[in-house]
Image (cartoon, rainbow, N blue to C red; front, side):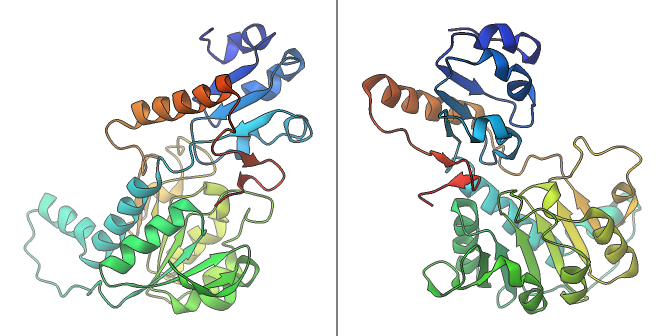
Length: 295
């Protein structure tokens, strides 16, 4: 077994059958691909694998697996926390506390409000179940529309998102990044949302046209956004998002609960035991579509 950083990957991957990648944003594998002639299996320690789907890997016989399932519940809890913080004005309360201001306000009831969850995989389903448990009405948006779904009730096609965005108080983005979902939330979708709507992104930054979102937030076209992911990470200090009071930022950490690294290591170890015994691997990614086919 060899442990290396990105700089040492070209040498380390030569002759290797299996590669375990911690840094799911790194382009190191693509750079080292000419040396990966023996590679048979790549495991990515993340749910999203968009950075790994370069053409050479897509067209190869290398199996790609991911961390499907590990982050579902933690991210669902983060989404619920974002909704509660928005409805109960917790961000404003903290700012008022820092200024020693006592200001009574009326808050928003969470039970009975509506959430549209974009992405019907494991993270989206865990989110839908948790939101339903506290009384929200939930619908889904996914690749394929359907009338009846056990977690979402109804699922609309992602291509029709603009037609359904106005229904929701909270629009939650939990979809994988693919060519079909890139810039899914654009100026048309934002214009269709309610002025009181709250956008939550726990998927990938590129699901959103950030320039269009910035304008919508500045104009009051939507009320607020809770963003854990961005097109460029870390978010540059000069980015206008930092200065907007109706934007709530976190550092791509919505699934990273205490012990998450150990959980990822155990997941890989379980799959490695499958590999060594010749059993089918878990969480095999459809490299053409960019997600685990079984979900």
